[in-house]
Length: 112
Length: 113
Image (tube, rainbow over all chains, first blue to last red; front, side, top):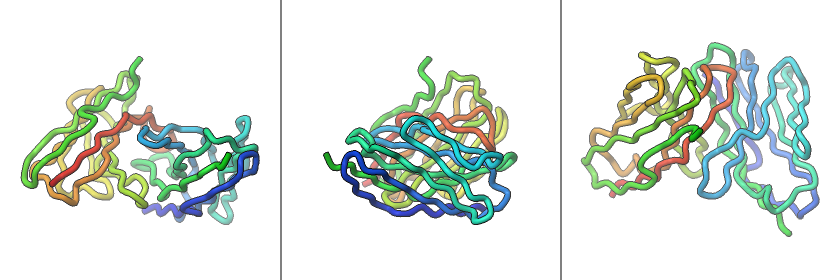
């Protein structure tokens, strides 16, 4: 089955800096890669996703890049703000697969 | 439009007690899931239902049972709770399995003493 590894487990940045979170996956058939943000005590919420027919996708200050050859994808947050502080999860799946496989999460702290 | 609704939000059980976690979605999604979240371990799939009338085991099904009551509702039952089942449980739904994002419920924090 699929295995998703996520790094780092914790990340602390200064407000205004960029943050990068990286994930690797094992199943070469995977073609769908969503990212979820979970604020303290809240439910995970989808913030961006990418499919394997594109290499990069942007939405305002967040972007995701995908390297299918190396089987890794990354979340980039620019101009970080205190409200970006949360746990971020990556996940992977493919058409016909039963469910998403999640990474172990990255706790991002943005220092004012 | 409530999305995915889970009940209860909090529960304390004694070892050996049973309980059912309820989940309902109003988005006409075909697929529903139960995950548990433990510190440092991400979200692990317990059971899922690809469509009404079907259920399948996930990564960590032992000690749990599920029922897909209808298209809207998917319940998770703990027959004899154990301390190892202390966790936060999330229900989620999606249009179908595979390459679709999930909508999560607000979670149930379960403590087994």
